Image 1: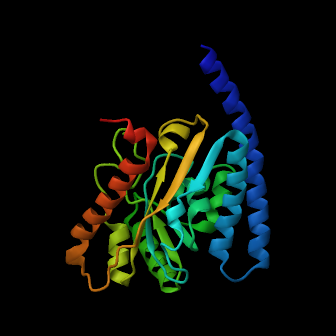
Image 2: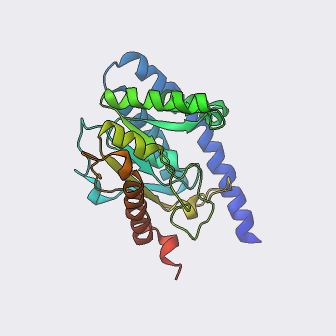
Length: 255
């Protein structure tokens, strides 16, 4: 009973601090976007990530980059970035841990969320999954983005993984790998660990802990065709699943 009371009080404090952090990030990032014309995507997410990191330190959710991340990805190279998806905290980890400028593919519902929606809108390409026209439009926008040398971030699982005993959902969708092969640019996997404890899927409750951001070596697509898509998808899936089993404390406890 005492533990539940303390967790409840902790979450009141965490959410009370979270709202002004998001508002300040929203205001600051918009001002910077008005003033700066180059490398806007990278600056935007670094600004948002900075506020997220400060909030995390205050409430005991520590966002930490893997020391091996340095030099994994090349600046100036566009990638299709694939990331596992557990909870709402993932976007903070991504903003803090990504070393390259990017835009993220996001379901259109996220843009409509109070406060959070306006915060993320400059950094996303929206898609209405129920609309074939919207899906085709989002694919067109992603092609245009990577052709400008900007990376695209996609959650290849499609939605949050609610099976906390599995590193990833049962399968990846084709979109990320189709774009990578079509544009002949590398797939750059990133895995986030610790969110199974700090904010499990399906809950709005925070818990103190450590969130890790791990960059994997890019997987080249030069010379691949659409016939190679299933093999590329399977390769990236296994790379990410293995890294999650290796690094996530929650998964280490599962036999």
